[in-house]
Length: 220
Ligand SMILES: [Zn+2]
Ligand SMILES: [Zn+2]
Image (cartoon, rainbow, N blue to C red; front, side):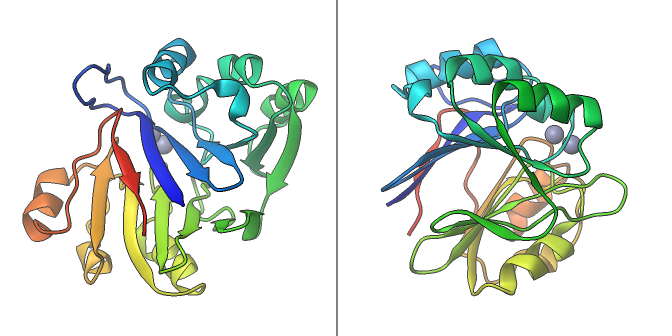
């Protein structure tokens, strides 16, 4: 089982509130993992409650990059999910890393590594804004989960492709115009900071899924 739920996004499904930022919850047979936190931790916890997700079941938190709209909710999540292991890019500032390490087990990510069975970090990619994405293995193919995709689609897709066939991508695609890197995917779910959403939607009509807080996807 690989179930992905968007728990924070600029857009929202009926009954949820949209707010600038991104967070997704990943449930496998063994683990519940949170990817990013949005900026408003209170709103994130409200969304989890509406989805009947108990934050104390979240054992791992992966942070894509050090931008306010992805890590603003970290203090609330650390309070609501005690005993968390947090996976943050090594490039995070010393002070943030020290604060996280006071309240959780901090694992710094530089190179690609497995987080839990079936879930791997690309490692921190990019030059100016360093960011990690996740590579999710459904057993039938790989899915890429991005925060903002600042390192660019090519760098992220190349990293994922070195581990196998990529079936889909979910998350913020920032201002990428490397649309050709989306060709052949079965799922294109662009959200959050994606600048060229309309263009992507037009190009990949059959594969496109609208992201919003409250969206649940069973990845196969
Ligand atoms: Zn962002
Ligand atoms: Zn960003």
